[in-house]
Length: 629
Image (cartoon, rainbow, N blue to C red; front, side):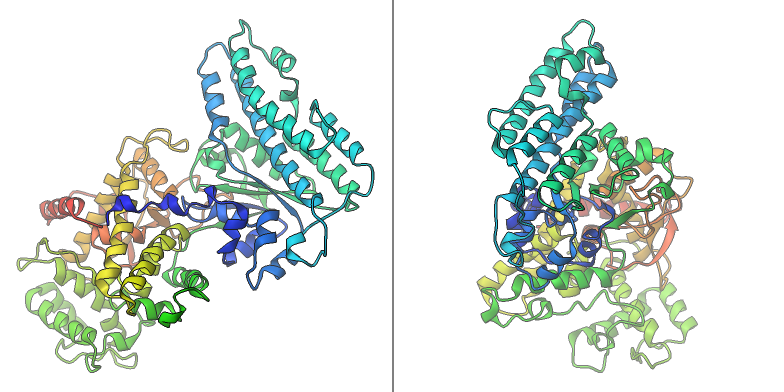
């Protein structure tokens, strides 16, 4: 099976209906935060679940959701969600018009806002229609937020038509929908005609396209207030769910951000953004963070492995509960995949995995690793002498004098032995797969990214069907880890480096990640032994702006993870001074352990080194040529 057989897009919620998304949705702390009554900005890389979370606030999804906690969420959500998918044609139309010297930028922006406005109105109409098109028991999930219009429906229809400047063929919600669809189709042809005028001005624009003068939010709120009054809910609230908003033109982003600070109580905003994009490059530098204190930022990434593993356990259990795999006796991810023996470290590690007195192959392996490395690595012998550790008499128990240190460094020794030659340089070898299999490793590699985790899990489920044996053999697990890692590498290698969500760099994104991974691998394997070799980096002031831009693109795709919170509610204004690690999904590609480790300044980490530089280059080249699937 090749990386081409695996695509992250196969699990993209963008292409799924809300009720389909609801069938497998599992609530998390992130969802609980999002459901609150405040404005919210969802910040996360591609595939981190932003679309899923927003769709799960829509009427269709909440009506179809049958999770044990669904009723509680339906009671707690105090607004009607209006899901607005992003449309890249808004920006394409603006760009096409703006590229013409004949069209003023103000006019091009107004046409882009008109397209956005129509899409918002279509989504709002859909939500209103769903509320009044069904009746029944208000406690029944299938009739969630159902309402009835308590007065003349035609009067409401006329009000909507007048407010949105629509010409209706019939006084009905269907008539409004038809008029909005016709308007959207008409807009593009009118915009083209407008661009060919000799003197295209705002006055001419409003004459040709009168509805271009509508303010999207004022016009929307007026209709929602009237709808609330007609259904007998004068205090009713609504939430505008704006998906993938990093791809829309920056002037539309500015319009939304400005209204976050001035929205009436009837309307809340739930906006999905990438960590870095036009909103961080163009305008939030002029927006004081405290001006948006009533806006909640929700970060869709996990800094710590324990949080990742806990979330993935919830996803796993929801997928296997009452499934066709029940007859295999799979009650936990550990039963399916076994434990990960290489990767746990520190005081909280499971001592039994390292205990040389226990009848496990890992205990024996760690004993051999200590003895072997002590024989071949002088720097390790110095370390053992300094810590008064006898490699032939290891006691990893928490109560032992050096038990915590033994458990902490044991995984590092495994890597050092696997990739270090007799002279202390790097050596090529068959890939060391043990650190990347088992439940904890596979969950960690997924980063808690639903798209990545489900992609691996689908393949592992197929393996279970084939051999019916648990835990699955390491070779079977490694195969599906490899194809996921390979697919992600290919994706990063092809990302645009020019105007990628408003960011441009002259560097190859994968090339920079490869350089960082190679440097960290060298520190782990060929540098003098350290119980805490660098595994993270800080973007220091010596890093060029172009390199920072390259890292911003990598952050948007989940290739690096930040340990520090964004410096603005809408994302990262700057990466300077912040600590990062490579995404764990790249650890197998660059032969790195799944651990945090201490930080090194990036400029220092990437500084030319005469020690092992050629070997690192060779090893990385071999890694690129290696098979990951």
